Image (cartoon, rainbow, N blue to C red):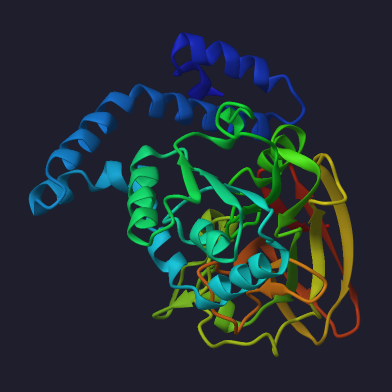
Length: 360
């Protein structure tokens, strides 16, 4: 491969070694991700200077525009729509009221705006310890907590949860853990690793966890209402289908108000993780068999989140339910032509940080 010979010597040597492996493309993709992370590290000083400038003049419009690239990276903009997700807010508040007592010590991973920590304090917790790894976010949350009169019962710790030490940051192991570590893809925020670590080091053996279970549910979908976000065929009388090989593996489709009445299969549970019953979460793969509802073309698997807080309290964002957590469409490389009643075999694989779905 000529392109390998054009790589810098140190990188070329490593790629040549990867080339000898049977899963070379996958290993190459992982290596590319590592290189991207290293490049980000090299640019840390630039981002730090930008954040310093913003801190000096946070209300200067010119400074705000000039530093948006750094601020957007350190303070993700999804914080704003997230706090306006009333269904999500309601289910967390009900869960906290159900499990918090005046004797409960609460640990929250991921302070964000401070909303959930304050809801825990308002539910009557003895004390809430909430950790936030982004200093700017921790500082803003602390101000919110002070403004709302919870400074005596909510402690913000500007650290990663994996850096917390009982006896230093927390006086004792917590009775209850609450977090919103899931993202649209379920595992994108290292939720499994963080829960594992917290159970071993930061929680009492009988501690409760909110949510107690997380899962993905999904259904096969197809038809013109889905193809606009993932496929090209004839547009303006011209064949653009060669572009389909560049389609991303997952997309966020525009499904406002749309139901799954026209889904190509019934819904099925793809994955589930039980934070109370399981101690570790190893990578795994499973094959599911679904049944086509009707004749047609399947373009992918749409998935949505399911969170279980108790036997009676659950949350999901199955369409048409609106949430800041958007369903994702796993785009199949090649559409599947199916007939009503025939089985469709789907492989679901996860490696603790990402989920992949494809037809078997």
